[in-house]
Structures are given as C-alpha cells and as structure tokens.
Length: 475
Image 1: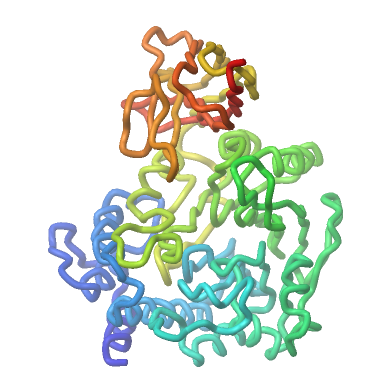
Image 2: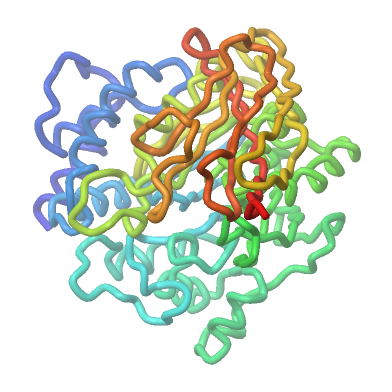
C-alpha cells in the first residue's frame, strides 16, 4: 500500500500551483502530481490535455488493468475523491467526482448521490454473474473504500445491468448501509435471490412522472441499449433526469445508443420548459441516430463525457483504451470544451459546476444537422442507389460529405469504397451531398452505411446518421 499512500499524499498536498507543462511525466506519481497541480477548469484544457495524454500512455499499455502500479494509482485517486466527498462543503451548484469510466458522485448542499457506481474492469460483478469476480484482478476498490463510499452516498442510480454500470459488492454495501439504490426492473430480477434484493428500488416508467428521493426530483425514461446493429436484441436501460435541491438538472443516459429512443422524451421536457444543465457519462450514440447535436441544440448542457478505459472492451494482451482514451475524448468534444461547456475528468478528479458561471457559453453554438433520404434502401446486387444527405449548418460551413462502412470480422470493405484501416469511405467531391452508389460486387445481405458531414479540417463539428442497405440476389 506504499504506492497508494504516496499518491494520496501527493494529491492532497497540492493546491493547484507550481506545475510546469514542460516537466517530463515519467511515472504515475508524476501524473498524479501534475493533475493535482492543474485542477479541472474550463480555462486550462490545453494544459490538462498534455497531462491526460501522458496518463493515456500508461493506461493504453497491454494488460495495464493487471498492473499493480495502475491499480494502486486508481485506489489512490479513489481515496482522494472519498476524502473530498467527506469534507467538502458545497454551498453553490454541485461538485462532481468521476470514480471510474461511467461512475460519478455528485454532492449538493443537502445530499450526495451517484450514477452507475462501479469499481473497475471486473466483468463478473454484473450480469450475468453475481459474485465479485476479483480472482486474478488487482484493479478494484478495497473493501474499506466500498464501505466508505456506501456511507457517503445517499442515493445511487443505475442505468442498466452491464458490469461497467453496476457492481455487486458496491450494491451490497449500499443496501447494507440503508441507502437508496435505484435500478431498472431487470437488475432487481437478476439479483432477486440475493439478500439485498428487497433493498433495490424501481421507479414507475411514465416519462412524465416525477418522483422525490429526499431533496432530489427524478424523472426516468425506460429505454434500451441495442445489442445488435439490426436492433434485434437489447438490454433495458434507464435514462434519469435528476434535479437537485438547488435547481441543477443532471441527465444520465447510460448506454442508450439510438437517439430515436431518447429524443421524444427530451423534446417533451423542453416543451414543458424544463432544462438540462449537466449531461454526464456516455454522451455518444452508435447503432442508431446520433442525438448529441439535437440535445445540444435543445438545452446546450455542460458535458462531462465518460465511458473511457472500460478495459473489458479490449482484448487481453492488446494495447489500446477499449472504449476511448482521455485524448480521444478531448478531441471529440473540443467544440464544447472551447465554448466553456464541457470538461474531461479522469479517475478521482472533481469539477465544481456553478450555474452562474457555466450555464452561459463563451461563444455561440455551432452545429451541423443531417437528415439523409432514404433511411432504408433495398436494391438488387449490381444495381445503383442514391442517397441525398439534406444537411444544414449554423455558424460554420460543411466542408466534407462522405459515406463510410466499418469493417467486420467477415467483411473488410465494400467494392467502390476507398480502403481504410477501419473499413472504407466514399467522398463527395462536388459537395452537393448526393451520392450514387453501385452495388456491383456486393454480397447479398444487410449493411449499415454511415452518412457523415463535418466542417473539418478547420472545425470540430460533425453529424453522422446511419442508413440500412439491404442487397438482394440478382434474379
């Protein structure tokens, strides 16, 4: 425990001054010192980007989740967060801590609550297994940390049953401590024979219904994470809108991954003149319509992304981040970061959201919107089809229009698409947003083709909508 104690001492001993960005970060101790000397702010993204890039260098190494040094660094950062949660007095806005990839703790003047509490890449701690699954794994919280976390958190929200969003031993500790644990019905069903099952709370599924948990007002949308591109299988997933005692509204959507599932609910909130101040966790959409830009246009929330370094999403022994690095998050959300409407947090870090400072952006919202027609195509092999992108933009100019195909285990590219490492692409050189695509050489079957517009390389705004293409055998 020497390393973790040293990290905690470094973290608690720094006050945010004295770090030189030119200093080499040769160890996780160096990273901890640098992060604590450069506390999260809407004004220091570039400086923090260099530190987080150095942290990426350690975490993207093969088997880093099995490194004792990485585990102790994580535990030291968790200790730092727990110390702050315990002692920090919140008088305005909310304080937000990130513990793991999708795990956040929020403290208000009156209550402390959490979203998707989990402790690390321990795939046996959620569905379908019920045990802690820590054999051979060093990356997890200690029993003392779990007990301490359960003592500090009053209400815990869980979006869905996947192991990176819910955790058996943490849930057990929360219920043991008499805390409120809110879950979708299938999590309660999953653990119905566990001693703590009766301590799990489910909420009525009416999107207009508001429930109170102490000083919190809660609305829930019962939706799903699609588990197949063709939407044939799904995991139930709740989205929660939590409004605090001092009027800060926070959206957790978990892994809802098709914008069509969440946008009508949010449009209803807007029609009732409700707001979303903070959009926390996995804010991206895949396997369906991208709703990030529509949500931004509706509410212009402050974004704190998550879901990076979920290590069980990468193959053991291979390098990489699994579900995204801190560097990729900064690149992906450069536009809101530059407008003062976002922050990228690593394990154990805190951001203080102040409505009077952070509700107003530094610059106008730039957006591009895409509505491709048709959304579904059926064509015989060898024939052509046409897609009209019908894209618009505000505050920027669309400079690239393209169709993209992501490779699979069985199909690396499609004829007619330029080869890329990840699949293939077709650009629209005349920029009219109309593509005529030949299916000559395509094998009959179902394909997902992504339609994308952006203002790159000069900007950072992008919109992507998939279309379904079914190729029939030529009779």
